[in-house]
Length: 229
Image (cartoon, rainbow, N blue to C red; front, side, top):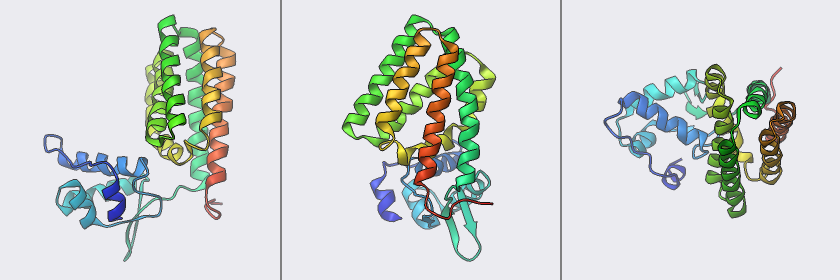
């Protein structure tokens, strides 16, 4: 684990933020970004050293992360990064598909010319990241594009619900961002065209297909034996 933490960007916690929350957020981001991988053993002392804090806030954060589904605490073994099951992925990404389909429909109804221009800029960021093979930038660009569509949709309740699943969507997307990339960004392009035309039905259909393809792609990458009855 020490090697993974060393390779990751420094995330030493700054003191002005509430320490417990800052440690929790830092560990969650290490998991989401893939610096800490599913199934990896989490050693309190190494995490505390990496974050520049004592072991107590790390221990408390691991307990909270277990409650949130990021970490598994195993008696007599310790803490491990949770490995999502096929069922978990299907449920979360299925909810995401419903929410983002509606978001795309609303965005097509509400988008102004400047919104469409911004979508194309975000699309270009993703295409450039894909060409460079930069996974971190690729995930950030994907998140930015989807978030902006949600913003253009203009529904605060919808935005809140999408935000609730957003972190885990990013976690699931990170390992497939590169292999899924070319197809996904082509789909983004067609989606932006539909939004630009104000075609809500077409935008919704493209987004539904886009999110379903991502779900199917992710599930095919899961190791055998991760489904639950």
